[in-house]
Amino acid sequence: MSEALIELAGTPAGAQLAMFLALFAAVMHAVFGALQKGRHDPWLSRGAIDFCYGVMAAPFAFFVVPWPEPHMWLIFAGMLAIHVIYKITQGMAYAHGAYTVVYPVVRGLGPLVTVIAAGFVFGERFAMAQWGGVLLLTLSILALAGVNLSRETRVNRSELRLALMWAVLGGVMVAAYTTYDAYGIRATADPFTFLAWFFFIDGLVVFPWVALTRWRKMPERPEIAPLMTRGFIGGIVAFLSFGSIMMATRLDSVGEAAVLRETSPVFAALIGWFFLKETVGPTRGILMGLIALGAVFVEFGG
Figure 1: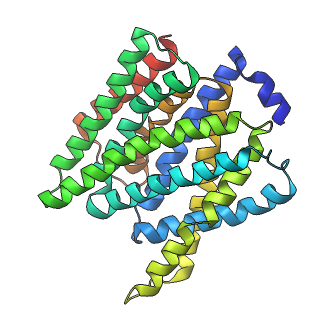
Figure 2: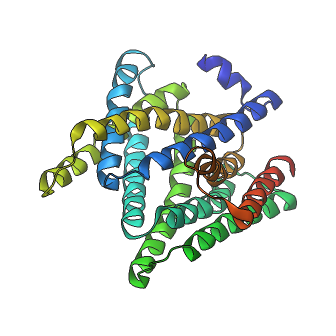
């Protein structure tokens, strides 16, 4: 399977598969965000999800995929550092601000910075129509954050500033891990080696222990069973989301895959509309349409 996928890289069929994988990653990322939106402390949720996907990845890392080449261990070390910083920024943003406000800011800045970074790292170039699509998508996502903020009845300005600061840093880190991980998955002969060891290392090394320490210090500790159930489901979704976007970057343009993945706010709104009975409204509906239109320009404007 790995050889068949590698042979598709750089071909029209590979580009089509990459587009599908990036859009599927957007849907899964919206589901992942909905899971984190739950009643649990975001640090506990993150630790439970990381622990579950780390445990699930272990047998694949040790017994299924080829062993990583020697040069991959340094790449994995850099990967771990970048993802730890990203998760800290994300957790701090969620701790200080409403999910519906900070999530679009994080995801809105990510594709713009990723496209710029991919130009330097991979030599990718966008046509003018594609740049227009990137800007349209980015500004529409940020406008969606503004609309959601306007609906917040109680806003603590100092907390809001902190939340937005962490969200901006989170957006930069999204671009950092997308670009770096795209480099990492191309640096090994078998892309599934990178994915298996990514989930194993990233899942078990840091955040389960952060979450356990935080849980022990809580005066009223939440029950473990519901938290681990959410972690198990989140782990499966993380496999599908991150695995899909990484395979998309292996098959085709990193920048295009990153932009398509950030249509996730559209799918998040649709999930809220269909399953959570949330009201979308005309303004949010127009912005969702503009986000989708920006993605179309990026994909087909080259």
